Amino acid sequence: MDDSLTVETVLAPVDGTDGSMEAIECAIEFADRYDASVHALFVLGREVVLGMDADAVDEETVAESVQAFLADVRTHADLEDVPFTTSTVHGFSSNRLTHHPGSVVLDAADAVNADVIVLPRTQSDEAATVLETVAEYVLGYASQPVLSV
Image 1 (cartoon, one colour):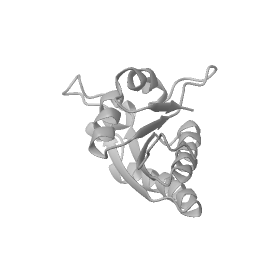
Image 2 (cartoon, helix red, strand yellow):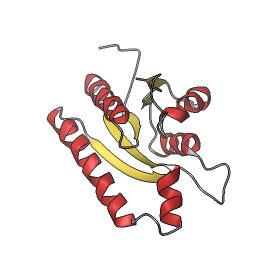
Image 3 (cartoon, one colour):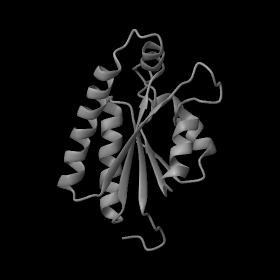
Image 4 (cartoon, helix red, strand yellow):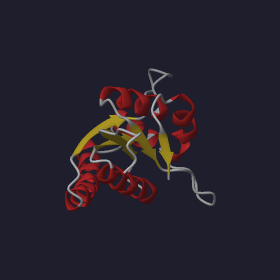
């Protein structure tokens, strides 16, 4: 173990995609190595948020989907015996231009006192997901080290 790096909390923003599952699995392995905890931040995408605001997307269905994804992640964290907490946030606001996925990730990092942020990176041949689009922003503005996987 590297004694020069002290890690107590790893923030792993997720959006329910395969890429975010891979990223949070890396976050759990990283936390296990440093005897740290993981906080999974589920970031709801623009279409979902706008759909809920317009009553076109059922909030209960979204909540069930988020809970199912986080339950799968919790199972993995439990297998590694890594302490695990969660929260969910709207990644967009139609009322505040400064409220976007990058800003909510950085705000959450401060709120949970994260020592490291683990994010999925953009896959070259696929359309970028909610979190993949914010990786550059978070890399540029985070006060914590950022691991893009």
